[in-house]
Image (cartoon, rainbow, N blue to C red; front, side, top):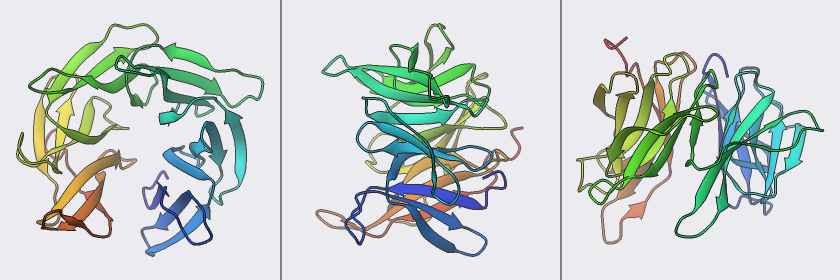
Amino acid sequence: MPNGDILYWADSSNWPGGSPLGLFVLDTATGVSKLISTELGGPIDVASDGRIAGGIGPYGLAILDTAGRELWHRETGLRVGTLDFGPQENDLYFCVTLEHGPDAIIGLLHTTLAETTGLETTLFDAGYGHLSPDGSQFVYQGDGDEEQPVAYFRRSLPDGEPELLFRSDYTAGFCINPVHPEWLAVGVRGDGRHQLMGRRILLYNMDTGESVTYEAAPEENCDVSVRCWSPDGRDVLIWVGPYKRGDPIRPLFSEVWVARDVLRGRL
């Protein structure tokens, strides 16, 4: 939501009543959370007016209002990996696997909320990623090299060439700042190469190449995944997975934390 006080998340766990999916809303001011849909699942995106877009069923897309009522539904025939509202917020951009196998092809598709509009391939060969706030660029994760197997790329829409931003050994979620879209927040390994769990946020400026690492682990034994920026572009929402050490480690209940004012002194 525009003020950042309302959080939405989709869970694929089995909840009472046999529901395979759940969309939840949390009011951070009161601490009250509730289930608003047993149909909509991840990935999700929230428009500035509160509408929530997400996957529904194996191959569908839907938009709900803040009470969980369905406003729009379309079957795509393809499983959605990531999605974003377009800058007009009557457009949806979403990533799907167009060809499977060792050389899988991931495409960025587009549709409008008009019932008569079909699916349009905006970018054919990319990776799972996110649209910039103004809709002019697409940032996505792809293959790196043997030393650093993950790479991040940027492409101008509709037909720009891929621009390599950086390579990494391991990442756990990323998002584009909605106010300062040159900045990425990326979840990375705790100690560079050897720590299997993500424990830091890499802040990366796509225009200048500046990068800084933000220590994000709120507990000694936990892993961290980046979820989204706050609407004002100052804070980063992170998913935290605490665990007990052992062989194997024992996962505990997941938590949601906010890393505050991570770009202080850099704007």
